[in-house]
Image (cartoon, rainbow, N blue to C red; front, top):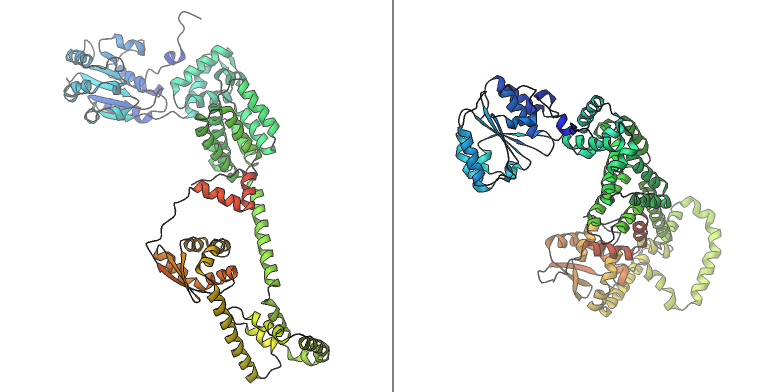
Length: 595
């Protein structure tokens, strides 16, 4: 290496406002202030590292004192008109006292004496207080320029006495243009993909990008290739990420594990890979919408790859993958076996079913539910009288079928005569076993040949008999029987009533049974209102569980002891244990509870 060699960060430090990258809002303001002779006595430049704060201060000092470009920016400190101080190592009160003494001395040549204080937030509180008076009322020839990466640590009394400028991170495309120009000046051959790798690795800091460029030149020489660059910088290249996503697409776990092993053997950091994979998934998500492709920071060739690969996954799939990878970044930090957790995460991505399969499975499940409901309605006893009644609605067909029905009627009468009278009557009484529906269609079918007066008498007798039977069953029923059957009743509400009604029903408890009236107590007015409105439907469900029709009487009570709220994860596990379909979905799609 030549003795006169200088790093790119020093060699290509801007000498004027036009050379400063991506800080036009600061450059324009300062140039207008110089033209209008409205320079402030104190400035503060804030922003992340490597974006040009100190460079901007030196350019301002050079411009207002008209220093020739032959004087290097680093040599400005050697002139008597520019004083630079590092507050990180000179943060005591004595250092500020020495600075105050220097302020009194006027410039030897030129108009202003510029004091550049870098990392000003490192000054102690006492040092800040010692600087206050001088900063508020400095001599006419003194200009203070403070630079800091953490302005929130600077005292408000200091911030109120300066003009503040916030520097922004430099965009990837602007860093790429700057690096391309420097590589041309240095006769370095480098492709656009490698330039984007360096620019993204720099994270918005041009100084970091020039340092990485120096490292790449030292490793690769005058010709920098993408494969050698990612090896030199230990960066996971987009080719590897596309290769892994191809394994996810093909559900190829063997190839995925082989790729993971290769990456770890080559010394790649797990967190670096997860960070790169997160950005890769984010770019694929954006690539679904061609109008947003400008948000992907990559070369045109890589953007076309993103657009091509994005069609292999839906946005829902990519969102689930992003969730898994981002969660893994947090968990792996505290894991005892980070490699195992890393492999588990990537295998989850590979084995994850697609959202299209999930949608098809759910639609098939809905179809099964509909078919089961139709079968249940067709096989229920209530549908049979309706069918028979429908047959008897057309009087024109009755004479034609009178002779055909005669043998059937005779045979049925023979059977009835053979059976004891006690076994003939329950046929009618079973039809009206519900106090909410006394079975009128069934009675009309059973006594179709009886005159109207006899029909009314039979109805009255059956009503009395059914009421007596219900009263006897309710009398034998105890409140303990209802309490023991209550969990089964709650489970029977799944799918048949709304989830909010089921939740409010769970908050009610049976406390007393008086005849056919069941007293319930709940802990809020909303539960009472909903239970009162849906009392008939809920009573019917309870009837199916205990075989006795009861009426609900709901009251609000504050004495009910609320059970301890279960953890959402415990409830989710309990649901999985009860429902094999949900458990199968969780195992196949890697579902996790998010709340």
